[in-house]
Image 1 (cartoon, rainbow, N blue to C red):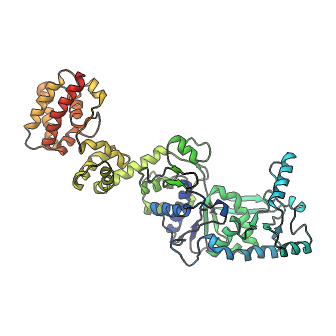
Image 2 (tube, rainbow, N blue to C red):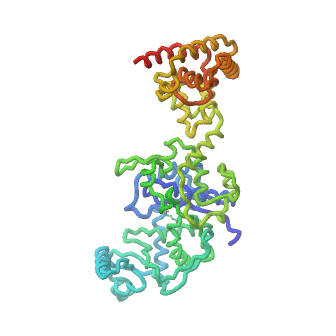
Length: 513
Ligand code: GLU
């Protein structure tokens, strides 16, 4: 048992796009598997056909591909333990539900949904809002425990619809050790008789999940905290099916909280505060509504993954930047915290900025190229690389480097604030003189331009503040940016002098109006 091969699964239900919390669950499963030389499996839990959303499974697969969390086994890749979609495993589950009935741990329930609704309504009216089908109430319901054997047989033979429910024992303590939360103890009096098999011939989540984890030889179940209340039910199922010896170990991951820490992070928080909660953009087929995604917003997959890793885990050292292999190396479930992890959109941007700075200029240029093409700009790859080298220190996203548009085309507008505050009556005269200095330069390098500029200030008795912003304005049209000297050098002498000449005239007209 201790030397069991590590096999973990990510088991989403294709009911919509994957929330970033789901990606974190996949990530922790992946890291744990790789750390222990194990397998990372994707299993699609689609037993609830009423909640099936077209495109959701493809979305999940694409999200995993984007983040680099590629499963060893799954619906796309196959594997020895397939099929990996529960709907395709349908014929497999019935025998286990039958075995549970045969051993007295489950029973047939014939109550119709109308009847159940009626009981619930009555309970509500009697001020018992949380009516449950449980060890007490089942005695007054229509099931194989209350009906005679003949009556049950007759109903089954007549093909009356029924569900199979788990028979919760009375007043028993179910305990298991969770790797993240320690010992969890629950009294069965607090658990209801869960439906394990539905009238449509499909197992419910609980049964399918346990059967599959067993058959797929899953060693560890790593999933979100919202599944913690289900775990005691699962422990009982392992026991009743005689699979206790190979019951997987559990690790329930902490919730991801809103940025202010008040409650679970939802899509609404993202909409309200302006950040995506999904890895990829999602086109809701039913509502024709588009939800933004990290990928489309220009986030790097590796930075996004790095950020997610820290939502609930830390390495115990100050190091924050880890690539996927580094995370595999550093990750342990023991360092996953119990308390909810606050999502921090600023930190998410910070990670992106760090990853942008780590990228080579050539890589960044490749990312910038299509954005330029969109704007109708053509430039040599080497030139785009130089632009990236110059702009990257100021950028969080590749698209931020479009601020340096003036490196590709002459400005057509001029920053009003600079114009108002810095462009004085004497400015045109100063700029004309400065132009001549630049024109006289033979070696038009950044250092040379800067040296000549400083010498010019010195001889004219002028301060930086009176000249530099205006020079920037003439060259770029904006009030801020990387070194003007670097920009001028990149544009080259002809273009720089041209811009000074043309834009002096533009500005003169602007000022006069
Ligand atoms: N299908 C469940 C989900 O959608 C899986 C929970 C589990 O991992 O057991 O999250």
